[in-house]
Length: 102
Image 1 (tube, one colour):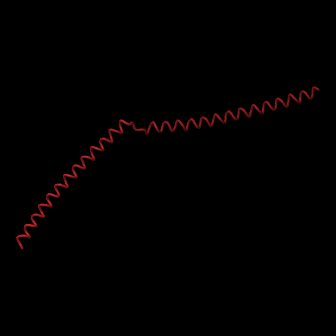
Image 2: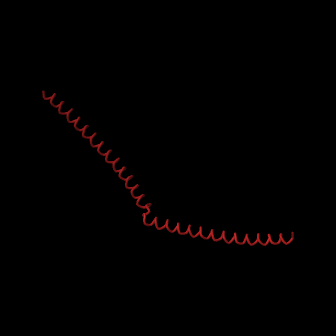
Image 3: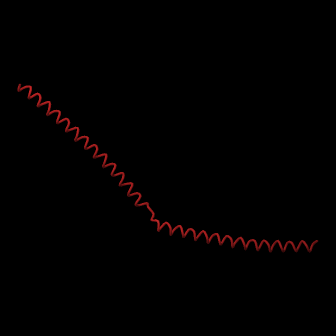
């Protein structure tokens, strides 16, 4: 009987050690993958924080662009008016010159 008990104790200890080793390996593997996931998440958070533009800053820049665009549009309209006036004057001068020749 004592050899059967020793055999049973040996097998039990072997199974417990094997099961414990498996649990430890699984826990370490899960910990490592969780740490990698956490690192990736923190990297994404840091990227968003570093590249994020505050709404107030963005609104100010957009308003500056709108004002600049409005100024350009006004300048273009004024330039077009001046060009039209000059073309009208040239056409008027050419028109009176033709009327005199006829």
